[in-house]
Amino acid sequence: MPELPEVETVKNVIEPQIQGAVIENVIVRRSEVIAHPMADEFCRKAAGQTISSMARRGKFLIIRLKNKSRIILHLRMTGCLLVTPPDYPEEKHTHLVMRLNNQTELRFSDTRRFGRFWLLQSDEADTYSGIGKLGVEPFSAECSAAYLQARLGKRKKTIKACLLDQHVLAGIGNIYADEILFAAGIRPSRSAKSLTKSEWQCLAETIPQSLSWYIEKNRITAEEYLQTKGQDYRNTPYLQVYGHAGEPCPQCGNLLTRAVIGGRSSVYCPACQK
Image 1 (cartoon, rainbow, N blue to C red):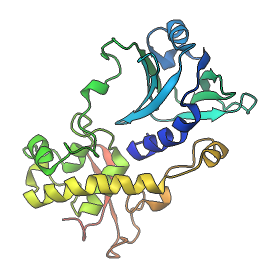
Image 2: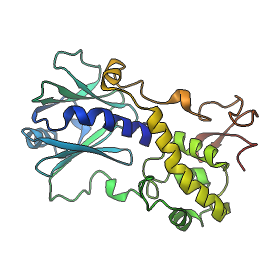
Image 3: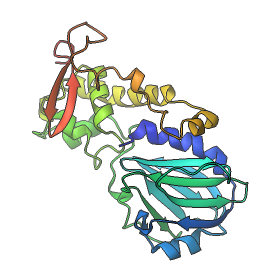
Image 4: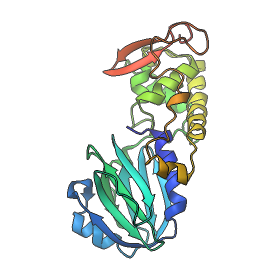
C-alpha cells in the first residue's frame, strides 16, 4: 500500500496538472469505487466544478473544489492516478475518468479494486471516509516527544505496532515504520512502554526527518511519472532496511534480521537497534 511519502509524491505530481481545471464530466466504470454518494450522484455533483487545490491527509488524497466541496480518495493497495491526454492509451483496470477542460483526463486505475472515492458537500460532515479518526500528521508541531509518550508510552504493544496506529500518527505504514526505527536506533520488537524519554525525543525528531528524506528521494517529474504509468516513483533503491533481510547493515555491516512483529514483516539490525 502506498504510504505517506508515496501519497505525497502523487499529490505533488498531480496537483499542478489539474489545479484550476473544470471537471466537464465523470465516467465511472466500476460503481464500487464510489463509496459516497451513489455513483450517479457523484458524477452529477462533480460535473461542472472547478478544482481549486489538492491535499494529503495521512494516506488520503483530497481534491478541493471551488464550491467548497471535496473529493476524497484512498489508493489502498494498487490504486493509481494519472493525468493524460484524451487519446493516451488507457490502463487496464481503469475504473474512473474525469474529463477536464484543459484537454486532459484524470484517470484512476486499480487492479485489486480496493481504492475508494467520497464526494462531500461544503456543509456535509465526513462520517464516511475515516479521515476524522486519524491522528496527528508527522510533520505537525503536535507530533512531539510529549505527544508520542503520552499516547503510546504506557502501551505493552511493540513500538513498531504503535507507529502503525493511524489513530495516533497518520500516514506511516509497514515500510517506513522499519526505516524510522532503524534511523532512531530502536528495535521494532520493543514494547512502547520500555522507551526512555530520550528515545521518545529521538523518535519525534526522526519521524519527520526520515519521511522528508524519502519524499525528496521520491521526487519525479510529471513526464517521468506518466511514462512509468505512475508505478516507478517509489524509493525502493533508497530503503535502508526494509526488504534487505540477510544483507549487511548499511551502518555496521552486521546482517539485517527479519522478524514477524504483530503479523507484519519487519527488518532491523540487531547490533544498531537497541
